[in-house]
Length: 259
Ligand SMILES: [Zn+2]
Image 1 (cartoon, protein in one colour):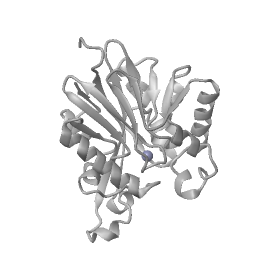
Image 2: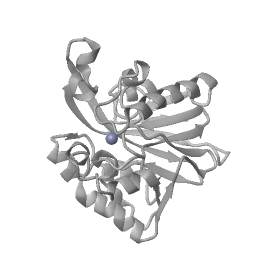
Image 3: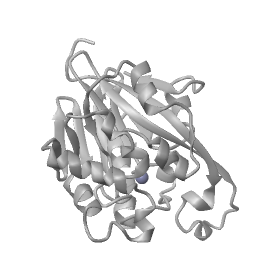
């Protein structure tokens, strides 16, 4: 890879669970369709070239996963080691337990997230039942520590993290959910994280159960459709879809690479 504004994107599947459609699609009964089983996979992403390595989210911790009966396929720390990822800047797409669980693997490193996301989780409504069950207090505490250590970079709307890596705040799923647009030799890749858990969620505009702002969620589906239509996005990487690895690799292992 010669140009320093293009990257390889590695998708890491580190966890999984089985659930039902009515558990993942908000007000599922409104669609008038039978309920049924659906899998949910857990991912984080590594963006790198010869000059830079950026980690996008850090997966759930052993405690956070165990508390919710999630299955760990590979410990995130082991995945980082296996892929040769040492210390790196970390992008936090949002502060849910399955996205910031191992932030302490990157001590002293810069952490980047939206101002709205940070402010919400240290604010007065973060402890309310419908939102609090998706976070771990100790991990929100660690996020605060990152700020106290002056290594938290927050942004609003958009942030050019490095040449070829743009962070975009979309909200919807959480108050400050972000998505990540990465340039690769195989075209632009959008790491949608939890703005799009499932391809079906995006294709049929079916918001996920956990929604801070349902209008923003609908608007984000439209925005991404526009980005795909114009070629601003070539590869859409969903945040939890069990089909994701098969779309970008052979689907058999825990990793797939684009670019
Ligand atoms: Zn989430």
